[in-house]
Length: 411
Image (cartoon, rainbow, N blue to C red):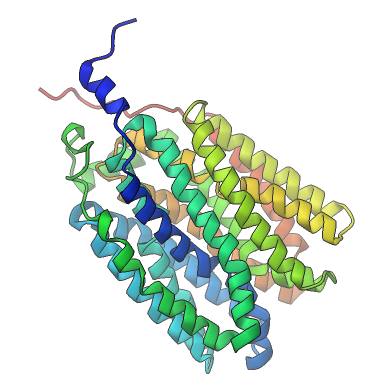
C-alpha cells in the first residue's frame, strides 16, 4: 500500500475546530428547540381560539414547507456570501414569526408567523447551513463525527425545550411563552460570529472542484445515487414531523396522562443525542447507505409494534426511547454522503435540496395528521402510511454508492 503523503497525514492529525463546533451546536439547540416543541402549543391555543386541528396542522405544515423550500436558497447564499449573514436572518425572522404567532387573533397570524416566518427562520439556521460550515473547517476524516455532534445538539434542543415550553405554558400561558421564546432567538446572530466565512474559506477550499451553481445542479440531478438519497430523505421528514406536531394530542386522545407527552418528547430528545453521536461514529467507519436503510427499517418496526401492542405509559416511554435513538441519526450519514459525492463547495445548496425533500415529507406528515384526524377521528392511517414509507426508504437507500461523481481531469 502506498505511503500517505505528508500533507494528508498532517490534515488527518489536524485538531477539531472546537470554537466553530461549539457555536454551531449552540445555534442548533436554539433553532431546533422551539420548533420541536410546537406540539405543546396546539391544545391550549385551540382551546382559547376555537380553531380545529386542521388549522394548526396547516400552520405547522407551512412551517415545514417554508423551511424546506428556503433551505437550498439559504444554503446557496451561505456558500457565496457567508454563514454568519444567513444566521443573522435566521435569528431575526424566527423571533418575528414567534411574536406574530403569539397574537392568536386570527389563523392568518398563526399561518404567517408560526408557519411561514418560523419556517424561514429555521431554514436559515438549520443543519444544512451549520453542517456545510463544519464541513469546510474539518478534515474528511473528522466530518462524520462533527456532523454527529451538531445533530446531537439539535437533539439536545428538543430535550431541553420540551419541559421548558411546557413549563412556560403552565406558568405564563401559550401566548406569552411564544414571546419569551422569540426573545431567546435574538441570541442566534451573536453566537454565530465564529461561523463567519463562505465556501472560499476553510481548510478544504483550495482543493475544491470549481463549478458554477448551474453546473453543480446539473451534475447532482444527473447522479442516480443523489436522486435516491433525495427520495429517501422525504420519508424521514414525514415520520419525525408528524410525531413532533401530533404526538401530544395523540396521547391525550388515547387516555395517556398529559405529563407523558412531555416525558416522551424529552426522552426522544435525550436519546436522540445518543443516536446522533452514535450515527456520527458509525458513519465514519461503516457503509452509510446500508446504515440508513437499517434506520428506516427499524423505524417501521418500532411504529408497527407501538400501534399494535396495548397502549400504556410504559409502552409510550419505550417507544420514545427507541424513536429517540433513530430520530436524527439519519442526518450525519445523509449529509456525509452529499459531501462525499460532490465535495463542500456547494454543500449548502446540494444538501439544501436533499433537505427540501425532507420538508416536503414533513409538510405532508403534519398536514395529513390534522386533516385525516378531522375526517376519521383517529391518527392510525397516518401511522401506517409512515410504516409503509419507512420500508420504501430502506429499499431506495440500499443501492446508493458511497463515492464521488466522476469528473473530467483538470489540467
